[in-house]
Length: 406
Image (cartoon, rainbow, N blue to C red):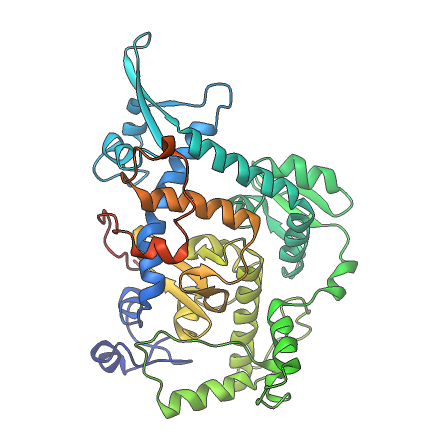
């Protein structure tokens, strides 16, 4: 969102900007944002976990032979962003990867350690145990689309974020034919996932509405209940200075009525100031609900952008996140833009964890562990790596710089 005050923004990066368009590039707008040290520290660790998961998926792709050659991984080093090569990366995480030499094939191979396999099984079990929740998430996602339909390739992009099993086409879609239907598109090898029965949409309540209800029911609630009707929970980075004018704009935005994520847009909003603000607020509500449906309350911007037109969002999504720093946090660590639902986190951990998240967090603990504790209990994950203690561990050397939007 851009105006002529870009020089002021660059000179004062901690001053918040809301509902103002900047005449500058996306990379400059991203660079001018206020950093949150808690999320940045978390992403310093998580960016390595993303690479670990990518290699783990390659190893587990063939259950009969769960291993890959180092030669194969070396060819994928650039794609996997392994700047120092595959072998160097694997050796950094001996609690996750085991390198061995196969004399019959005369080359080194890599497999998962027993600890990593155990965590992978725990995650799979947690996903299978939560299949009813998975179905509900998918129905809600489709319900936010104006056509009640989404491209299947877009869902493949976020299958892990939604906690879907890797065979979700069979285990979720095919087994719930009363809810889902795969339709052919006009393009070859392209399919759409359609919601067959939309009668349940009227019963859906957005996550932000549940928060409003809880806030209003608190005995010490000092906020007027009418003011809470269209409000979103806000929290800001500790270094962010909130001016009086900014607070006034937030208060005005909070009280603005909007069409919820599960409601139909019956008429196009007028191109007035308040009409545009209402359209923007609906877009915020849709993204807020999308993030609420994910397992870890976070997703890459590139992935969520695949749903922009299907959700009727005619705005720059990256700018939308930057314009609402009290609701979302954008990190650029690890050569990717990652968006967090700020209210879902406290001190780098989910406030309300779930079994799938817990299993993934154990793998992150092994990433943080690095080469430490090699002789402790044969590579088994230790309980001492909780959120607090993980923060005290020595941070891994950074292979990547912050990544700005092109």
